Image 1 (cartoon, rainbow, N blue to C red):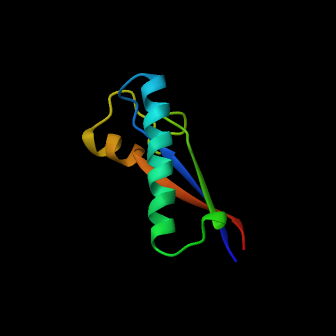
Image 2: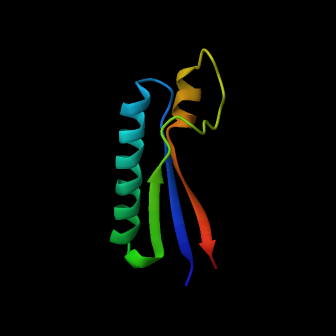
Length: 79
């Protein structure tokens, strides 16, 4: 019965517009993957947040820090 929300993010390379589009595609892909594993589509949704919520805030990021910022996270909306 759990309902999940997928938040997808990018690193800070690329324009804001490009990163928002990329994170939206990442969110859709994440949702489709979860659905393909048998979760009902009415139990998961997603949204892209671009580079607005970095996991690691950095000015001169290392490749590892960039990689940590490129991610999808799951939030439990309803148990």
